[in-house]
Image 1 (cartoon, one colour):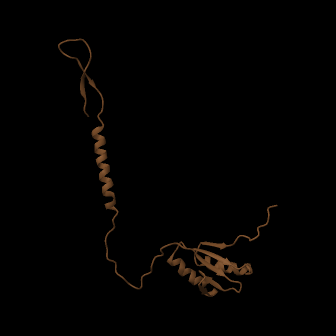
Image 2: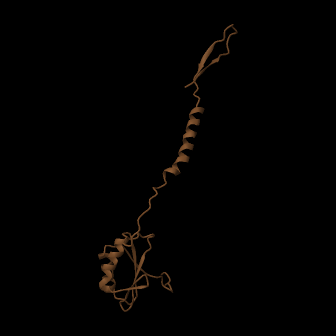
Image 3: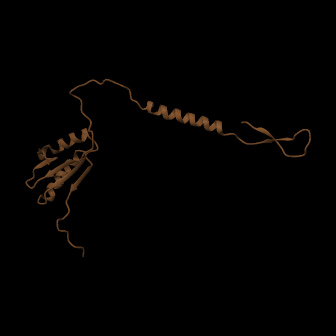
Length: 152
């Protein structure tokens, strides 16, 4: 900390009277802080670089899911089950298929679409198989009525 002595205005004598001024000079501290800030800004991106590794390749490895897209399980009028509108599944193999999906992606969401003419009991059996496989994010899909009723 630096201080200096300032001459006071007083009597005109051969000697001047001095008194201490208690002011802190913060300029050097600000300069040091700005230099440290620049150092951290420059070095921070260098710290995030990962280790460069040449990974081995194999056919037996499981690939991790790249996104968390929901699955759509459709129950048709005749009871046919379809996964994502392209894969037909037998009801007996539904739990095993859903278990395999859950193991590859634990946060999978399943949307169940059922025909309006499918019985409530059959829909509940499908839901029981899906939740029995350990999938907890399951929802029914509905659509808005084409001619909505007027509010009373």
